[in-house]
Structures are given as C-alpha cells and as structure tokens.
Length: 454
Image (cartoon, rainbow, N blue to C red; front, side):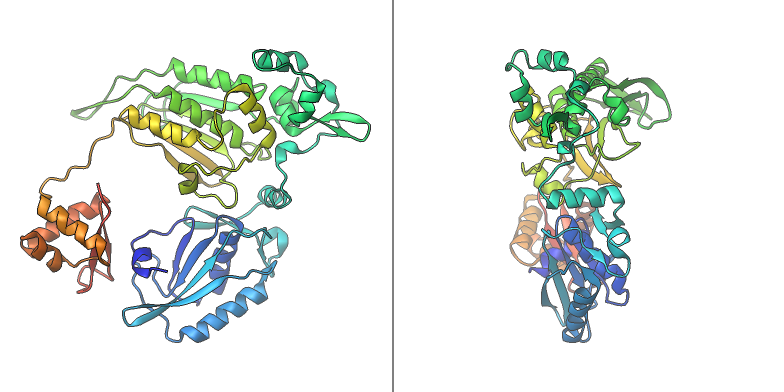
C-alpha cells in the first residue's frame, strides 16, 4: 500500500478515511458496504476531510480490537486484509475488503433485513428489500429478468411483434424463444419470463407499470421550464426507438447566450446518445417501483438516468475500461440479437470516443441514490488554461511525480522562480485539478505537490 498516493485521492466508492475507532458502527458499516459492493480500502488514523494523518497511539491494540469487532458483529463472516502502515512519525491501519461472494453481509444487531449496507459514491446507504433481493439473486448467479411469471402463459407474448422485430435477423419459433429465455418451461406449460414480457408482452405495463422511458426537453439548464415531453411506453424495443426519435427531434443545438458571453455548443453526438440510451435500458433495475428510465435534454447537456446502481463488484472506472456485468441477461441477449448491442462491454467506450470526436468532454458517469446517470455535455471542451506555466515549471512538476512529491521551495528552485511565484502557479493548478497536494495544512513544511498531467 502506498499511503502517499492514497492521500492524493478523494474518498469514493472504494476508499474511506477514518480518524479513529471511536464510532465502531460507522466503521463496520463501511466495511459491510465495501464487501457488498465493489470492495474497498479503509484507512484508520486519517481525518476524512482534511486528510491530515493523525495516526494511532497503539496500532497493534486497535488492530486486534477491529479484528474482534469484524468477527463478532458482521454476518456472514468477513475476512479482511489488515496492515499497519507508517507515515512520517505516525502509524495508521489499512483494512482492505474484497467484493464478497457471500453477500449480502449485515450488522448482527440490525439483522439481515435492516443491517445491510451498500456503497454509493463516498457514502454508505442502508439497502432496501429490493436491493437485498438483487444481491441474493446475483449470489445465486440469477438475474431478475430470468424470473418466471408463472401466473401467465405463452399467450401473454405478442409473437407477431416479436417476429417483425427479428424478421431481418432470424426466424423466430418456439425453440428460439426458449433459447433466448423469453419463454421457459414450468411443469407442463410454457410461461414467459420477466424479460419476455418486458420485451414482447401484449400488455407489459400491467405487470410492470414503471418500465417505460420518460423524455423531457427543457428550455434552459434546469427543469423549471418544460418545452416538450414524451412518455415512451410499451415493449422495450419500441420504447427505445420512440425515445431515440425524441432525442433526434431536439438534436440540433446552435448556441447558448449566457450573460455577456456567447458559448458555442456542439450538435448532439447521436451515436453516443444511442449507446448510453441502450445501456440504460439493458441495465435498468425493473424490480424498482416508481422509477422509469429518464431522458432529460437541457440547453447544455443530456442526462440519461436508469433505476439501479452498478452491480456488485463494479465501479465507474471499471465500466469506462469495458468491464461489464449484465443486470438483465434476457434483455441483453435479445438486444444483442436485434443489433442494438454491437459488442459486450464496449458501449461506454464507444460513447466516449464519439464525444471526443465531436470535441466534447467524455460522458460523466455517476451513481445517485439508487440510480445511475450518464451525462453528455453539449459545450465544446476547452483545454485547461496553463498561462504562466513555463516549460521549466512543467518539467519541475513532472519531476515531482517521479518522486513522492516536491515542496513549494523544491519546485521553485528547479523551475528557477521565486517561492512566491511558484505558490501562485500552484494555487491555480490545484484548483484546476492538474496538481494534487498532500499535507496537513498550508503551513505544513512537508507539504508536497504532485503533477496529475494535462
């Protein structure tokens, strides 16, 4: 573990700092949330906001205490990796938790229904019954859309519509529908799956009233003025097509007037939008109630939001690099057959490439409450201004990155400028996100700077 590198990072889905063990419940909730979600690292002995390393007076005693707390108060049993690390004259405890195959884990005193926590961004959230059910399904290697609707029969599906959608791809017969898990046998009869009804049901809204796409076009940068809207209902392939047509209708954006400045906007990168829209439909959690997929078009951005956070074991960084897990296998398999999906796990990467090609920032991906949102900015990406950052300053900062960081005076000396001038440049670079800083406060004589690049 490289503590210097960790101190440059902000708390997030897989990292948390704790000052001490004075609130053991909070610590245990974090460890449970890590195990139930994507794993993570908890560092005890560091203030979470300032990242000041306070250290632990007796790390061996606290390590044993924490091990006992984990063993006595978490079910099923959780076995973390614990390490004592040294930072200058202080010592901290690092607890690493891996995504658990035994999820969900819970606090014993709260029980399996009230003591399950998951990690959303940099916070721990108590899981509701639907999320707990999903964790249990995934632990059994099952997905919600493979569940059987045993109170229905094959007549609940519209075979004519299904055949029309597949007409240019393959002949759709009963065997093909069973292979796709749209239909499956239950005793002596064929019954549809959840995915089958969502994809080809005659009345999908009767079983799933919230499985639709809500589209809105807003006049400004917030939702105060709704200019146009559309409810895309019915089977998922048709709802997807309707939502995409709505986006196409509002695709051309020329300029935005803000104050005295005119900000040029790019046209909507439609291929990127389509990739993210398909991704939202395929990965939505259709077990959630009152939560349709939402498409919101603003003057400066497009937001596509679906119910359901990332599946356990996944982070935003993972999906940016093409790592993918299907929340809905039936829907995903059918969308692949219909050509909505070109290659597993590549949709986010293709959307990112399309945005960059259009001169836009890469899509912003985030988990919000129990939903996942992808945002495409429509404002042309502007390079970060590096006024006053000479080649000598940049070279000094690059050298800082090859060390464990350099102080203001060390950087000033290497760049051939005064410490005061260096501080001015560093303040601007830190605020722009190009330089990170590690230290207890602005007067810390061992405060170090690291170049993050541009």
